[in-house]
Image (cartoon, rainbow, N blue to C red):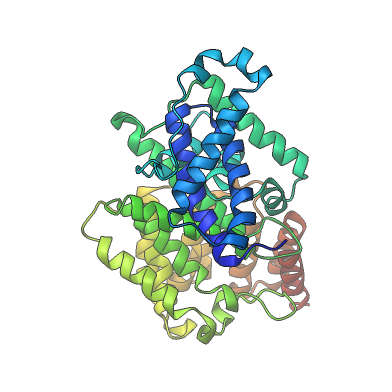
Length: 405
């Protein structure tokens, strides 16, 4: 049975709210998550037949709560949870929890006690509403492997006694940083798929944008939440122009800009306009500003590279990282010439974090080609092609090298 897309969208929106309510009231994340999944399945079946109830969130909360109580009152569970079951107070239909605990749930899934892969998986499962099979497909691992990862993450939260609710004020800034990073990683995995036959996974980028939009709505005064959403929109705006019909990569300078999404560009620029200058500038706002400069150029030749270079300089001050230096090297080459860019690129030679990153060799090949050093450029392109697990990037880099023969 195929779920009505409108019902499916509503269930995905309500799922984290209902799960957050149950976890806040009862604890035991894993049991609550199972109960919510059962309620979602029941809703998908019943709502398609009888229509969406007047208060769908209340309906889901009530059904999930009953499933939870049924489990806890079963013979085997009663022996394990007598004390918990004794104090359960099941809400009547229509008495759903008014508080939206989605943000607290997001903080819980991104708790620092979890490894990054577990944070990603748990966020997509509990907050994003993706199935284990969908998450496994997105990260190209067997479903059983992903199920174990999610199960271990939930057990880690339980055994660590992680409290449900907003983080203490002393931890808030660092915990928000982790939440933003997790959403950023989800988007990047969708936009720059690290392995396989596809260059991008639009399902992951769309989910990352949805979650970032939700976070911005929940925390409208957080500049970096707005900056992350703007960055995603301004980047995803180019998605339709990134590949040819056969899936081959089209570099930014050669993309048809009439295919870019004007709506996403306008929304992203508007978000930046509202936040830049009014809050402390962070790395996501700066990256979004760089994306906006690219998106607002009518042609590649009209790109304001000096402004991009200045923004990368600011980004390197705020959030130094080898990838930032890598991108700044391109901007340096566009402003001061390829040899200057190559000189900056050379500072990354001994950085262990870039040892297995094919983008370093790909950028080196590009700058060497700009400088007219054809033989060295071919070597770098071929080396980069061997290093990446992405089939579209392998083909693109190999073709770049072949065209220099």
